[in-house]
Image 1 (spheres, rainbow, N blue to C red):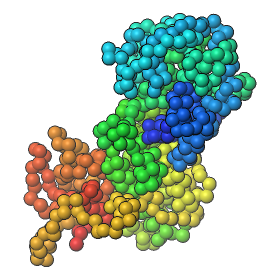
Image 2 (cartoon, rainbow, N blue to C red):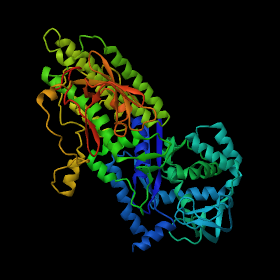
Image 3 (tube, rainbow, N blue to C red):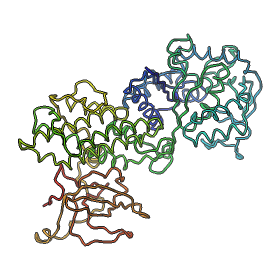
Length: 631
């Protein structure tokens, strides 16, 4: 059995956790869960960094001792991780005896390496960063680039680590292991730092009292970053040379936000080289989150309302959105409207409706899961695509492409939805066709069972709900086709993703039972005759492709199959739906409108949608044959 050791950074405990912390921790959790379901022996570390001048200052401002303050804050992190369904194996605190013992051993080894010396330091220091800036990185206005506050000129006696000695070794590391830092943009930034030359760094503070004393000089406190970085080995029992340490070190992945890669990809490997320990295999950095295009800011009140969004959509929807919406490694813009759209399109419509539809048909026509005795058209396509999805998922996970990983699963989900439509399984109720109906429903349930396994690293609660509704009492992680046993009694429950009515949520929250009004406050139009209404030809169609209209941010070009032909329709829904979420969705289309040319694209109909706070497509509650008239 292979081991897999993944870590988040230990988050600095001078404030409550925010969405950036959640993003890192959820991404790491998805990796941990993926490797567990694939049979690896996983150890997943997260925790909090509780030392340093900022903690001391924050605690004092609130009237607490540093330890009292940390003891109050740590449970806020652990409670959030429980709410987000994080499967960490340890939550490390740097005030713990385990960490303190390990740090003493680490600092002693570093000192005995001969690469630590005592000297006087004079330089510019950022208190929120708890970092000294090398001369070549000090801006002309002498302000911190991140915090936009003046740097402090600090003079004190410190111990230093000979980081400059390891410049060539680090350059060789980057050359020999091009994937040591991911993504390439971060690697290139750090290569520029290395090639411009490294300076020795301070590893102690004599003017700070809250921290761990140096074992070789109790008059000095370990600099907060030097205290924090070795947590990745202290958590494994490095202090006693424990078997756990030898089993899991070196780490497979150190995951973090991009602003702290320099410490992890330059300082940390250099210190490990100095004491002769193996280096972590990969440093992985994601981008920053913004909110509706603006930088997050406490002072400006721009923040991501995790509690509110989880309350509205559920924890799995929140996890899904963070991993599906953004390309990991790049910055991501968190938009509540996009979360709502993804919830209704991807989760409620594509996945939730598929499960409900299949279980509904099975409950209506069979006593238990039927035998797949009557193969037919499209069956092999479903099986083959399922097997291909398993392979592609592994490739995406290795590249940290969580969005692509989830999209590959949704390609399969949409294909199974189309399989239901293509086979018109609901019509096969006669005795002579019922065996074929049973085979189709078995294939759908087997695909859903495997889909639940593939989704379990990302949305674990949903995966368990799917298998319980299929009738599996114990979670089945086998992804081999045909593992679903016939004769199982299904136990269809409530919809796994009930549609969310934002206006209803707002009324409940404000306790103001006013009738919601359309955003435009448009008056009801003048009456028309019934004969005028009968002139509209409304049909059920299914979207088979969708793509943006060039030069138009709001428009999508759709191909809609209405049974006997395919219509091209231009719809102004791009702000509310993405192309990939629309494919396989049934819609109501007006088919007897005169064709119109919109942005040089012919539109041969109109799809119906409700338009208010958001745009929601009008869809049938259950599967309907294509071309069915809507009256």
